[in-house]
Image (cartoon, rainbow, N blue to C red; front, side, top):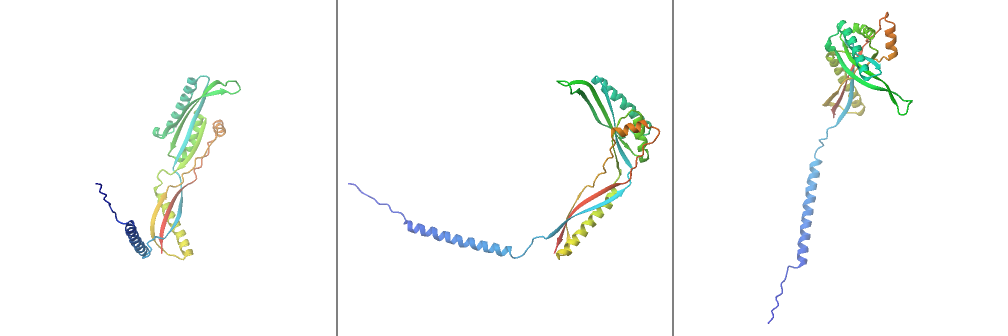
Length: 256
């Protein structure tokens, strides 16, 4: 005898109705949460309103230190000979600097190079000789001696003066003056902007500073060096003038 048992399950209609009710409830709750968040956000404006400006302060100062880049260039058929000639020439220059009273710690080698010289008219190009360079940077702490240093080194065999730069050894005092001027310049700009916009400056939010501009070296080419060496009876005039120290600031001001 066969017995048939029928299993029943909840009506899909009731399941569907239950899901619909749940989704509606969730949607009402979500809307309520959004409304609450919107009310909270609109309750007050905490956005910080600011004016941002750059300020620059510049101070001129009389330099008390000079840096001179001095070199020798020698050529020879063989690489070793060129290198030895350059070394010997630079040794004479250094001894002359020491005799002038330049401290050895103020003489620093900045470049040593040895390069082949080619005949580019041949195919392939052939090496015709070698060129050696030896360069030192000399710090002169007595500005009045700069011209004498240039003349003495040229007369001693230097055939390159690559540049002279002047600086203030301790720029602290000048930088403090420049910094104050930079802040004053920034505030003047901010006051003008605030007045034009009809707002009021409340306080400083942030300040940042960037370094000042460095003085640029004075370059002398080989022709000038050759002229100075040929006319040894006339001292090379070197005028240090003034150097400019600059400080830049970026300031944010809160406004109301």
